[in-house]
Image 1 (cartoon, rainbow, N blue to C red):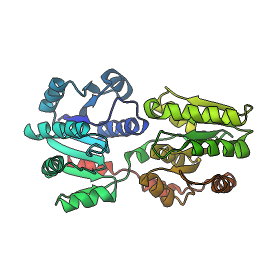
Image 2: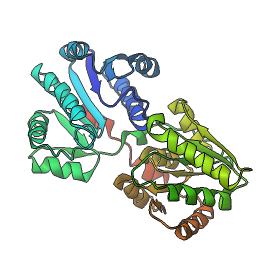
Image 3: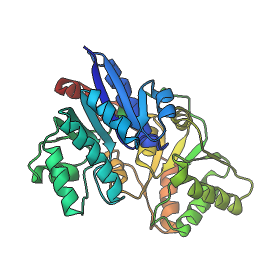
Image 4: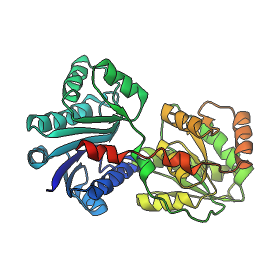
Length: 340
């Protein structure tokens, strides 16, 4: 018997982390013992179909979404931070609406690798609580979400990020240095300037690759860093990589000597590929990853003197990740299949 899945999430927006999660999820669903038919709700259905060999409908073509929910067996909502209202009430209402329609049609709902909350609107918080109590299986990616659901009397399981399951072909390392940045309110021009000075001081003889993971958020700040590096030293070989496939990004990262990165999934891919990683700590999940692997990290408010000291230690360090530790971080898809 073929099981029919609908997948709802932040897909089709060219966000590296979300798209990589979708890649892992769709590949695993296809490997389950019973055959799977998959439909993804996406803002770019044609691209989603081409990338993952699945059916896809436009996320905001509500009639098509309802039709697909009517014919499916399961709705998988996630991964990512979908159920929160910090970004906007609109996105939360949309994702809750998809879940509500699935439940109305008596479909089984899976909450997949999500971060739940914060939800400041009390009405939306109560609706979220009511809907999640009817979900068949819930996995969350952090203790804060787990504690919130526990407070609501909802059973959930803590899980590791699904991107840990991605297969990366280890490559021979080059002497290239990678940098990955994203726009963020507390990312000051002074930090960009100090980062450029450190690149000049420690890596002026290396090729510098700056990665834009999602152009809407990353590209402007990546170009600013490139300009600042060239302003400090016009002889440095620096380029920005944009508008390329996730597979190409992963290949490029896997051959680096070192990676200095803000985004959680950039750090994750670097670690998984055996690259020396210096995280830029802008978010609790990056800080937690740094602690898990005993990595020094750059704080957005650090002084130039402190940054130079961290760079010096980082340049002289060696990659020392334990394969067993990384493998333990894989998402447990066997448990998910057993719940279906």
